[in-house]
Image 1 (cartoon, rainbow, N blue to C red):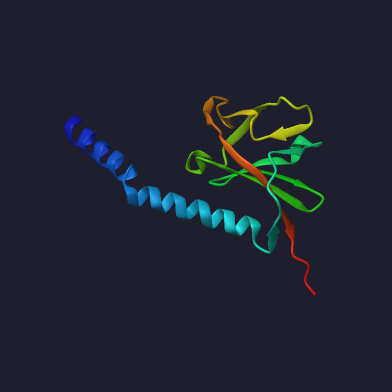
Image 2: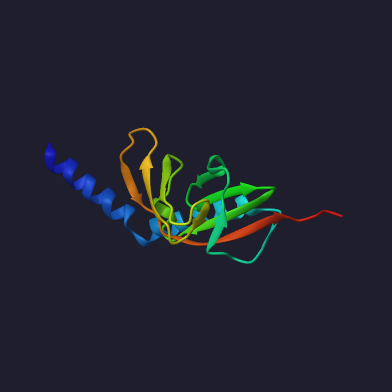
Length: 134
């Protein structure tokens, strides 16, 4: 009985590691990102941003970290977005006070268990502002 289960588990693991599965995850991540910034224009990327209210910082599944201030979305895409889920909570060891930088040590914990769930490597923060309609 154990052999069929082991074979099935190995098959599922191989499928999850397949290029098609990775491509599907990348497509989902890109779709999520496009939905997030729809109707907005990208500005100049910055390594650090000022975050007065950390409650406005959130994880965007399959994208990265998002901070919203005065109608501007600051998005730092994760270098490994496929490992970033809505259940992850960022834990950030800041080195610049109220500034959040891509060089800060960032890891995630699982919201439900409180256990370590991964290390987060971020690209620069890009501001996305709403396009004025006129």
